[in-house]
Image (cartoon, rainbow, N blue to C red):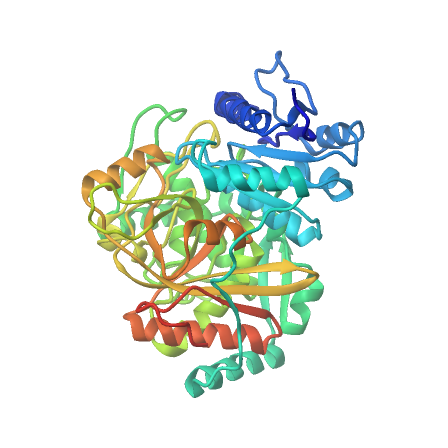
Length: 541
């Protein structure tokens, strides 16, 4: 008989009912296994909201529904948020902010059902909101690491995590890095710059919105633009210009996987509209003087236009289809129009800083965020390192992929999420040294975690295995993070997104990392160096 705590359990889901129905079996499996683990440790579990048999799932699917659920539960009870899928944090965040009992977020470890992605976003949103919580993740709900910490939380309401890889930044001794950081910071604060935002709050990602008051002291100001303006501008681009952009991509070797059924397949008509959206985005960025722009897409544009992903990949590449302004001159020729996917403003600020630093250092300027989708050992034995699957949901700059445009391809986005279709910009990330980072809001202040790593090549069979287990239409990076274990990254990282950029070699990457850390510190952020250098030595800012 249970003599431990009686625990309430909730599950946040997607806003899109088709996704909730498809993902419900995976969520049900997680809940069953988690409940069994709690019971085995002497506790009991009660679902705080009923399964909706008429809809075919048991997720909280709107913020309104979440408010109703939390209004009728014991605010002091121990509470688990269980996630086997991508979820919208805003569905449960208001209720969790007022909950008085201990909170535990729990995610699965599956490449196919991205609960760990939803978990990381929820954790980051809770952090920004100042909510105290603990977090756990597991492959099968049987491993000692998970069970011992679950038992600890059941007894104490807290979980111990290993943060030994995190080191507070101290003023850099690298004169070149510091000098560059001071120059960029001074320019930002004197000349100022603009971050273009096509509608904030993609998919409930509260953590991805930076309050204006935190950007003002940096010299950065938001230009809030409606996606309806982007939609209208897209409709005004002449067919001939879209065809020119499409022909440019074909000449570069980008392969399009076309079919004939637009409801299921990628079609030329969809891609031509994406080319119009790309041209419109470039012109709007230039018209409003935006150094970086972010497009929300989900949910505002999904019923009006094909996916924005191909657009976003092109924007972030220095080599991209030329777009002329009203003066007849090519806009930002040979440069990216820096874009932050899913209008993640933390990634946008990071990308702005990265672009300025890498431009000054003569390093590759293409940068992107990825989802921390999954990770695991390499079963082929090619490497004994832990290999992360970084996989953003649609596009990366072609320069990141092995073979550039010629090594990349475009597939239709899944109909479940993208009714209007549209192509991705997919490929396998080329091997090379990277700088990774994440800006996040905590205690009302901007923070940056930053470290070093590399993208590696895996055998074709292992690459295919990982692709088929995740999302085959999306780009993928086989990522290794120096000096940071799986559980350390999961415990510390404050987003489902991780920002990555290449450098020409390890020495250049070390300098670029030092310069970005110094710039963040100069701008007043709390900076932490995470992990080690390539050789295992401590990171040097």
